[in-house]
Length: 235
Ligand SMILES: *Cc1c(COP(=O)(O)O)cnc(C)c1O
Image 1: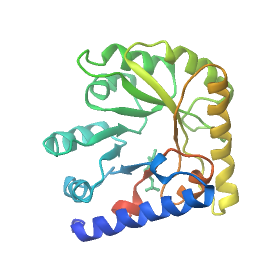
Image 2 (image 1 turned 120 degrees about the vertical axis):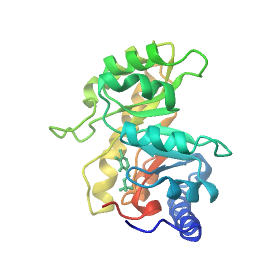
Image 3 (image 1 turned 180 degrees about the vertical axis):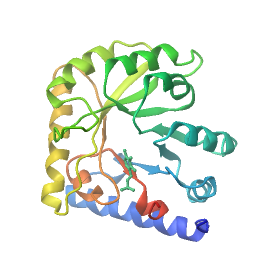
Image 4 (image 1 turned 180 degrees about the horizontal axis):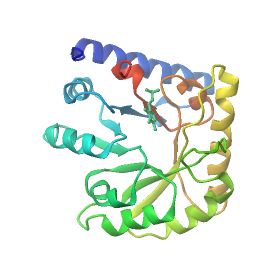
């Protein structure tokens, strides 16, 4: 087993990722405070999440339901409480625990899933924050609603009572060059602007990861999902 991440390393990595976000925001003439950092903790042990939480990180993202539920239970007493985001593929028979235990879901790409999340969101909780995952580069075999069907899905999801449509998410194919990385992010930002011009009030662009967060910030990302740069590489 790999040794756990010591607290000093957790704070170093957090500082370094925050600096990257700040530098890119500065280059874009944006306020770095307007960019939320989501730490993607899939496959990483609870102790590593705890180290990052102690260093001041509050938002954590998970891809696999059972793994996430186990970690949430173990970390339930953390103060201040952690904010949990589901970012993985969603099977319709798994919506109830997602609706019950998470604060955000970034990977909604069809109405049936959104409707079930709304129906199953417990009454005592605030509406579940949602992003629609968009297959922005229109790759075959890739999750996400097609860009030209996003408006119809957004209109339908916005009517649901126990979810709040907050924005759009994308996971583009990896590119080396910043210029190429920026293209899909620019398209996603334009799509959100179109939806807002059509009457929505979306405020979240969930885009950018360890390798392309600068490109995402330059194109207007408000929420960066970072795994490797905070937790080290995954096996
Ligand atoms: C794993 C994952 C990330 C983080 O990726 P890194 O390259 O490790 O930063 C972000 N978003 C989603 C949807 C992921 O599955």
